[in-house]
Image (cartoon, rainbow, N blue to C red; front, side, top):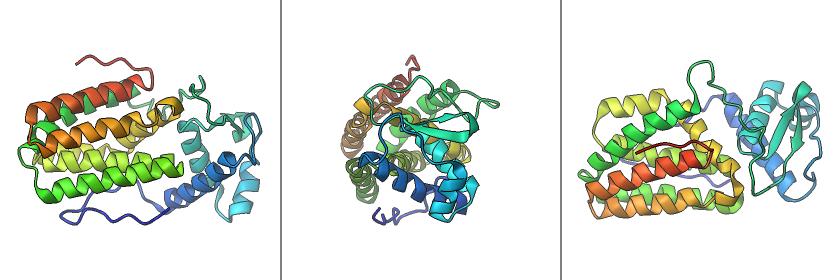
Length: 245
C-alpha cells in the first residue's frame, strides 16, 4: 500500500498503531490478496494460527489481531480453536459477524448514537471555520479512501474513513469534541470497519463523504450537519442498527 501523507496543518490522532497492529495490518493485506486471487475458496479453512505465525514470521498475537480484523470486514468467520473459514466476497453479511469486542463496556448502538450527536454538531461548526487547507486535507483523505477501496484494502479504507471524520471534528474548534473522539478512537474505528462487511454497499460511505465535503466547501452549516447526520444513520443501517434523527 502506498504511503499517504498526513494533513500538514495539524497532527491527526492516528488509530491504534502499536507494533502488533502494524504487523497485523500487513497480514490482513497478504490474506486479502490470497482470498481475492482465489487461492483460498469460500468455505476453505485458513492455516492454523501457529502455521500462519510461522509463514509470516510474526507472533501468534499479531495473527489473532489480523484474523479478528478479517472477521470484522466479513472476509472470514472464526471457528472453534481460532481456525478461520473463508467467506469470500458475498453480497450479504454472514450472520456470525456479530462479535463486538467492546461488549463488556458498551454496544455498537452506543457508539453510533455518540457519533450521531457529536459529529453532526462538529460538521456544523466546521463549516463555519473551513479553510482552503482543510478542504485540501479532506479531499486528500477522500481520494486515499477511494484508492484503498479500488485496491481492496478495506482496513486502509476504514482508517481513511476515521481520518476524514477526525479532521472535521478537530476543525469544529471544540476541544472537548476532539478529546472525546480521540479517547474513543478504537471503538469509533471499529464502528467504521463494521459496515465494510456489507460488500454490496462498499461505495456508499465514499458517496456520502463527497456530499459532506461539498457542503463544507460551500460553507453550508445546515447542509453539512444534515448530511453528516444522514451519513451516520446510514452507516448504522449498514450493520443493521436503526437510528432516529
